[in-house]
Picture 1 (cartoon, helix red, strand yellow):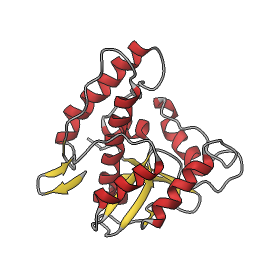
Picture 2: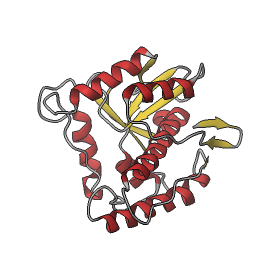
Picture 3: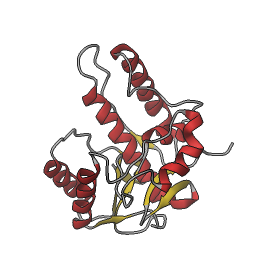
Picture 4: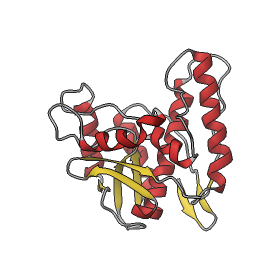
Length: 219
């Protein structure tokens, strides 16, 4: 995703599964320019057990929207994998971006939370529930999220010109879900880079774990 005079443009939507492939893609897309990578996973996990302050704070604001997040700690089975991924991003020059200024030059990585982002970006009373349930229910909700993104993001600030894959009538939904999620995470990263703390909220902090969420616009 790149920013030009007319707003954001989606350069590519690829679904890669191997860490090496993903990091090569990130590096190729970033080039020598400033970049922010939005990652839907915990990037900083200092706590051996329990819940991070970032999750506790976010849940206090978003639980009523059904958009709370699960606890991340070093005892969780995913912890070492996501920390290793963050470290490899850091080796490519992507520093943690919870304290970056708007439009700051450099490479940054941030943790994002798609459910909370959709609540605020699209002014929802509840999350779009496309992650769980029967296939038909998930397909219907994923289609709803797709329509929201296609109808709202081109007129958001920054505007995003985009195309999204269609929801398949049958078969596995996960590939399309991952691609749509990826576009949403990239948009949150661009929103953070452009507006910083002025139009976003950071839950937690760099050293203890953090989550960046676009602020709900006041009317």
